Every structure is written in structure tokens, then in C-alpha cells.
Image (cartoon, rainbow, N blue to C red):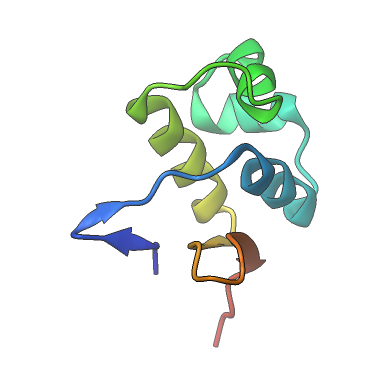
Length: 87
């Protein structure tokens, strides 16, 4: 299940993006291929340079979620990521 707020996906942070890639063992090149987002954009996002467009964040997030990552929203304990539990 995707993290949602008021029916829309909540944006992910640069740290969540890096952590998500690490969880599933993806390189930035792999994320670029899976998301359709140029690698240079992913590098800039993960370094916290600029503010990516909503469509860019959605493409990155969707690729990572499809690979099994679940994003945890800020809830007082900090935003995070985890792997989905498959039953």
C-alpha cells in the first residue's frame, strides 16, 4: 500500500530515495532505467539539489514501490522506508 495523504501520494525525501535503493540493491543507473528518469536528475535529487517536479518524484517512487519498497511517512519518529511484507 502506498503512503497517501488526502488521497494523493506524499513526496519522498532524498534520504528515503537513497535508503530505498540500498534496500533493494539498485544503483542509480538501475533506478534511472526502471523509472525513466535521467540519472543526472536522480543524482541531483539524492544530493538534495533543487526540487524535482512532482511527476519526477512519482516516477521514482513508483519504480521503487514496484520493486518492493514501502515508504513510511513522517509520523513524529521520522520518515523512513521498509520492504513490503508479502504473505
